[in-house]
Length: 265
Image 1: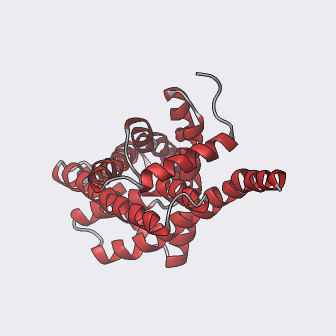
Image 2: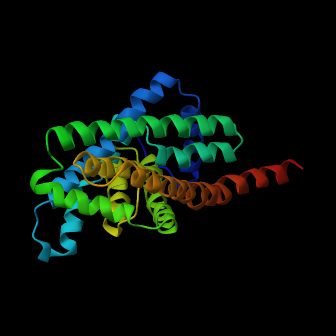
Image 3: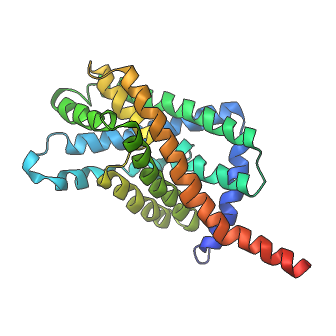
């Protein structure tokens, strides 16, 4: 069993994982991508059910309670199996920087996983949220309020918020990779995810659940959904690619490669 991995070892494992993700078959991307979207949505659904009817005067304690159940989604994905585009933005891009993955492979992975994440999220939003009424009735106000908070952000606000979000989500994936036990992985995921929800950052796949949940209830529109998803997707990509992949690649991998090169000369 041994100790958990060091950050340098995490970087190497992440590159290897990115290569595996980039070479996945389409059916596999469908199964695991659908699960990824559904699991994030189930975490968000739990969050809405937790916060939904709490008294307003409890203030940010309500947000804290909701944020504490949200990590369920990423725990299910990383421990149970699932593909999430926001995590792949970090791992596949790092493999690309290491020249182990081609740009077209990266684009293919991000495209299909995003699409299948969307299907999983819409499934949960429609059947559990709308058909069962779990995001409606007494919970409708919280659902619409939360979705409204996402779509009322300007393009640049949504983009910057997306950066903050996926910096933390990619770190949750990173820390989870470093832990070797289920309990270690769970704790590694818990705090960064709880923090991003508590702060109020925007996550593209979470938004694929909450905004449609409001739309299915007869509020908001698909145009607002699209106008939100694009900047949040871009922000999430920047957060993962620049602040996690690039920084750690430069710190742990590039330096090592340059040192090896010098010793070979």
